[in-house]
Length: 523
Image 1: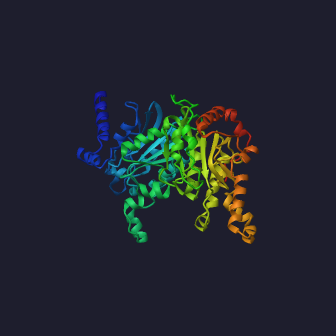
Image 2: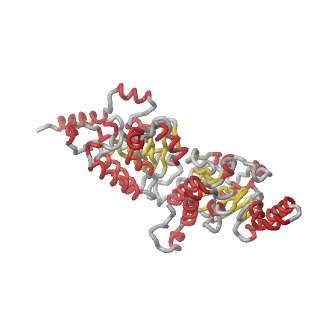
Image 3: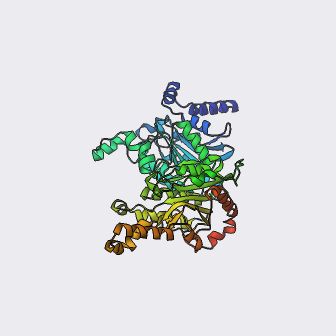
C-alpha cells in the first residue's frame, strides 16, 4: 500500500505532466506566430491568482484507432472560473497543442459543464476557440456531444452573456458553437471560421479558395456579419473581451454595472448646433455626434466593418452603460438595408435581454428599395427591427437629428413602436416620405399638365416640405416629446434615462402583456 507521501508525489507527477503543455520549441514557434498557449490565454485573461480550474484530469474513453494509448492533456480544453477586473467569469480555452484541440465527447462535456455552471451561478462565459475540429476517432460520441453543447448554450442564451473568441481554426459543425454566442471576437491573422475548409470545398464543389479568403476576418467582419469585433492578436482579443464585459451585467436579472465619471451629465455641446449641413443630401459624420454626447467621448463599437450605413455599440451616460443604435449619413445616406436591419435587430434584442437601455440617433431616408433587396427579403429582415423594438422592455430613448422617413421612422425607434421618449432637433424632417417623392406622386398630373412643369414641381415640393418636413407637426401630435437644441442632447438623454431607471420595477412592463412563449419574429 502506498504511503501518503507517495500518493502526493504521484499526484504532483500526474498534474505536472498535464500542465506541462508542449515542448518549449513548439511553444516558441507558436509565440512567433502571434499566438499564446491555452493556459497563457487563461493567465492573461483572469486577474492574477484568481483562476480555479475544473476538470484537469478529465480523460476520454475511446479505445478505437489507437486512442487507448493516446494521452490528451485535460482533453484538449482548459475550463474554470475566476475574476476579470474583479467580477466573476467562467471560461474555457481550447488547447490546439493537445491533439489539435479536437472536439471529442469529453472535450465537449467539459465545455458543457462550464456553460451550465456559468448559468447556475449567473456569471458570463467566455470561450477561446482554437480547434482542429471534430475528433473523428470517436465517431458517434463526438457527433452527439455537439448536440449537447449546442443545446446547453442555447438554453443559457439570454440568461448569461456569452462571448466567443476566435483565436485559431474553427471549421465544420463546430463553427456553430461560437456563432450562436452573443458576441464573436476574431483574431485577424489566426482566427478562421467556416462550415467547411478550403480542401473540402474544392473536393465537393471544385472551388479553389484560400483559408483566409473563405474563413478569415474579412469574410465574417465585412461580408457575412458574423464577427462583431476584429482583434490584432490574442492579447488584443482578450483585452477587447474584458472591455466588452465591463458594459454587461453578470446575468439577465441584474442591471449593467454603473461606474463613476467626472463628465458632467448636464454638459452642453455647442458644437452640435452647427453639425447638420444646410443641404439635406449633404453627409456628416455620426461618430462625431456620438463622441460629443457620451461620457468622456468613449464608444465601444460592434460590427463596425459590416453594414456601415448604421452604427451599433456601447457607451455610458453618467456612468450608466447604454446601447447606441444610429444611422451613418456618410455611408449610403444612413439607409437601412437587409444587413443593417439584421445588425440592429440582433443588437437591440441583446440589450433588452440584459437590461441595457438603448439610445437611437436618427437620420435615415428609409429602408432600401429595389428588386435586389425586395427579392432577398427586405420586408422580412426589416420587420426584425420592428419585433425587436415592440418586444423590448428596457428604457428606449430616440433623438431625431434630420431625416426620419417611412418605415425607417419605426426601424430607428418612434413612439408608435415603443419609445419611452422621442426628441427632435430643429433640423429634423419627420414625415412619411421626402417632399420630392411626395410631390411627384400627389401632384404628378398637375405638374405634367402645367405650362411650366419645372416651376410647378418646385413650388409643390416647397409647399409639402414647409408643411411636413419639420419636427413641429410630430410634436403637435405628441409623437415627439420635445424639440430640443442640439447642444442640449447629452443633458436631455441623461435626464430621460434617470427617469426611466426603474421602468421595469415590479415587472409591470411584463405583466401588462399577454402570456406567450415568445414572439414569432420574421427570421
